[in-house]
Amino acid sequence: MEYSENGSREEAKLKRLTSDAFSLSAIRLQKLPHLSDYLPHLRTRQNPIDDSPVFHPEKGFYVGASEVVLRQILFDLSGEYFPSDRTLRAYLRAGPRQTVCFDPAEVRAAIVTCGGLCPGLNTVIRELVVGLWDIYGAREIYGIRDGYRGFYSSEPLRLDPKVVDGWHKRGGTALATSRGGFDLDAIVGAIEARGFNQIFIIGGDGSMRGLTKLFHEIRRRKLKITIAGIPKTVDNDIGIIDRSFGFQTAVEAAQQAISAAHVEAESAVNGVGLVKLMGRSTGHIALHATLSSRDVDCCLIPESPFYLEGKGGLFEFLRQRLRSNGHAVVVVAEGAGQDLVPRPENIKRDPSGNLIFSDVGLWLKGELRGWWEREFPGELFTVKYIDPTYMIRAVPANATDSLYCTLLAHSAIHGAMAGYSGFVSGPINGVYAYIPVEEVAEARSVVETKEHKWAWVRSVTNQPDFSGSLDDPGSC
Image 1: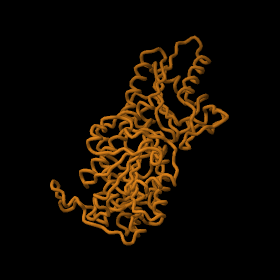
Image 2: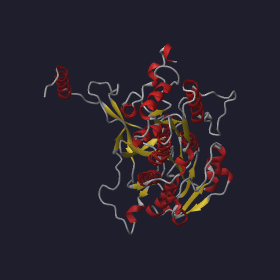
Image 3: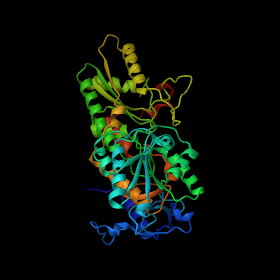
Image 4: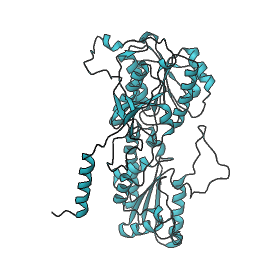
């Protein structure tokens, strides 16, 4: 085997870099809010897990105050991916602490689900209840119905392990959910009036922004109330954490729609199966479903612009694929191509403030039919459009997501009992951590089209880089 001169240079460079004193100046621990920040006389007690008649913690069970999780673990020793200030951001590791700030007898916990549905919601609710009840011995646990507005508009539902038994086998949320309804004074007033001192909020980025406001108001009033978030979004667009719960279930459920579209397309003359998947601002579901199914000929996501007409456009690609294979399957995320879809004059938003998108699937179906009629009049052509979006988010969590939901819930419980507040629990590089909610509310996870995963999609579909020719005047 021959080695290139370039390869030898790279090896020499790596040897030089690793032999140098190439070190970091510091690890910067992100400050995690704690009740003691504003309650100087806060009393702590030994973790009641020590008194459990069944479980006796072994050495190493409790997480130490110095255990942290690094946000960044990938480096290029040449400096390209290295922090400019030579510091690494770190977060406290999640898990049970040796001491806690609540006597289980005084805990009054409230659990609420906000925003849209996602596989695993009921699993998280159930595990919060079971964890508080069985691990810590808390007996006052309540479900808040109808999202944020439920704090001040409806009676809470008393929860215990018998009530929530079997909830993890159901899709949706047994507590009901809604968008909007966030009234800061009314919510905090209701929390105080009902004596809640541990709040668990399961929701997406909008819900996490609401959680941030609640946390600051609770801290301003110097209340002994912890508030924890469990990030939820089927689109997987929450940043910092590895992934959101329910995402893997959604990708798995999307396979059925893609398989049906493939069968329909393959069974027709010049058949196109068109599947619209969830993904307002990011194409994670579409990307992973495409890589998983291998029946997809073209994947369209919000992060990668595309165009229809002209050289290098979608129509030319589909014409070639139909001529060679006789059929094609197209997957489009709901937020893709919104710059192409005609918008109504009065742009509308939902109660959470999200822009209401036009249906890119129906629009693309019409454009495909119009194109074929213009270019190939008289030739057979079929477009079968499948929109499984609400089916995907309404199914129960699969085994992987169920386990994930359990660990998320238990991490949140341990953090709340230890007195941490204004945080989100989630895995970073495979290790569960506590993250200040402000960071999660601001961070977004998108498909990086210059990195490997999108390259994998293009390699398995052989689709062109539609955005690469957008600046070519002759391509549109």
